[in-house]
Amino acid sequence: MSKLPNLTGIAPAGLADAPDAFSALVASGKQPDKPADFGGPALERRSISEQVANRILSMIKSGNLKSGDRLPTEAQMGIAFGISRPPLREALNALTLMGVLESRQGGRYTVTDLSPSRLVAPFNAMLSAADYDVNEHFEARAVVDLELVRLCATRASPEHLQRVLKLAVDGRAFHHDPVAFRLLDIEFHQAVYNGGRNGLLATLSQGLYDVGLDVRRVASGLPGVIEKSVGQHVEVAEAMMEGDAEAAVAAYRRHLEHVRDTTIQTMARQQ
Image 1 (cartoon, one colour):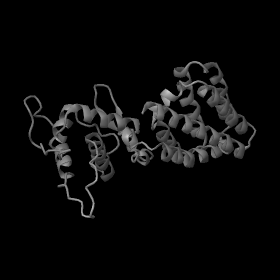
Image 2 (spheres, rainbow, N blue to C red):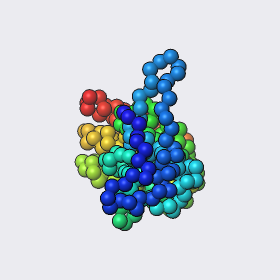
Image 3 (spheres, helix red, strand yellow):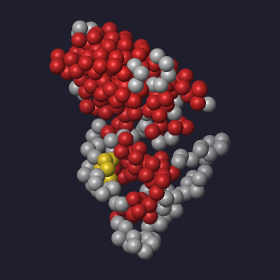
Image 4 (cartoon, helix red, strand yellow):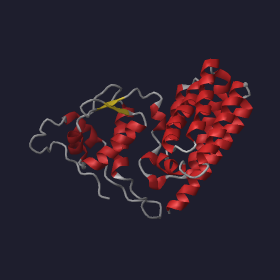
């Protein structure tokens, strides 16, 4: 993949108003490629969308872009980065999923409040399915999610735990409706994350939950998968209601293992 060309100051007719400051920031971050110097072949280049996403993230982290800043139009950013719209939109969509950007009316993107969201920046699997490692993914989910389950069981109010239980039990109505179950599943997990009362960990867990969703959407259609997941949700919620954090963690661990195994099964079928 060739290096992104520096098109600062070059704009076709009708786009002469492309912001010079933004173009200058982009250009300032572009460094000449250096050959590998460790005796082996050069590492595979990242996709253009990943490069653009990381460029925007670096601008945010350095303070060149701040919370509340409104990004240029897609056309203007395409000129600044020297790329076409498809990879640009892929990068913007990924950053939106990560909570770094939000789309406003009129198609312009705005930088969000990034204090917790920066933690999900390394989730490049959102940008490139080829990099997805299912075991690594669920190992990370176990580290973060299980602690939030423990915290939820000990910190959440009785009313919040009642909501977690209701979301779990309501899933019994959707054993044969994968779309409805997936919507409820998101709400259940988000309620558990929020019940831990730690915004940073909740942001991490939500980011990890969002990784690999395309595969899990297919997995949810396998026979018996939803029924087993719902039963495990209920086990987690009931243990929380009883104040048994260890039992809740054990039940949630079994749930993660079930989701991991069915994800692996689905990926094998797709090959």
